[in-house]
Image (tube, rainbow, N blue to C red; front, top):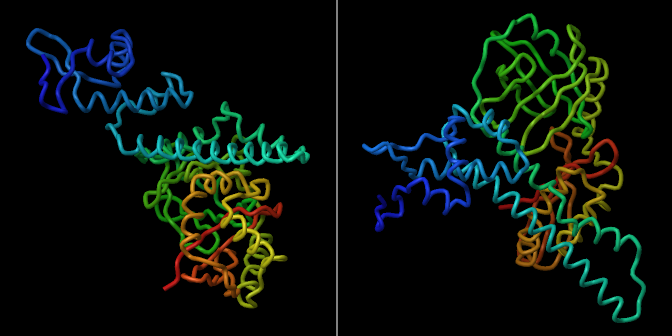
Length: 361
């Protein structure tokens, strides 16, 4: 029944269940739900190959993220197996979990050293330890799941063009960026501050998707009236923007244009940059000063950033270059062995909502 010398051999139901940590009954249930379709022998025995194993891997990964079988069925039914997308989701969740564990361990070790020296441990450190070592926190899993869901294939459905007028207008994110929704021939387009307008396509009456990037826009509002907000679903996060009038949108655009023209950074820009560089070199961040999305992304990349900066050498200085079309402050930062460009942008509440580092030629 099995080809022992072949890594892609076929497995019986009993072999498949045992090796995947499932029951034969579970395999039958997944088959009933049309999630898997095992091959049949002449004697009608079921055989499970690479395609079925990959689909079972998807199912188990989604179950570990807390999805019900009904939700998994709705998500996967009718879609081809995408093992790489599943592995990417698991990689992101595991990386974030490792970063959280490393951060918690460093806090614990530092506090124990203080205790050994007879020094007091600050209450905020104990609170951070409690928070960072809370292994029941599934925030990274939630982000990984949303990345997975946002990357799945989308199918355009016909919608009533009259509904489109409900969504047309201007919406402002907490970051200060404005999304402009406009009518185009046959549908709608969306344009974020400083970016080109992109076509969006209806997946449902109130849910649209981009074809050029794995992202979606959903709209909320009163029945029959204008949408009062939209949600951008991208990179595992969900950002809400609220409708503003055209005059407010124009004022925001004018203020940004003036900042760009005058090369005017945000208040305390240099101090914020120096703080970000210092934290990046040390590999220890004040995540309370970051939005949730940036904090999660930083946790995932903290060890790599620290290693890259160790190679860059000692910090020499920095020069403010200007403001991007999206409102990011840009600096050229000189290190002993390398020159890097640093960018960051602030949310309305003053927290950092985006940060980016890239090598300069």
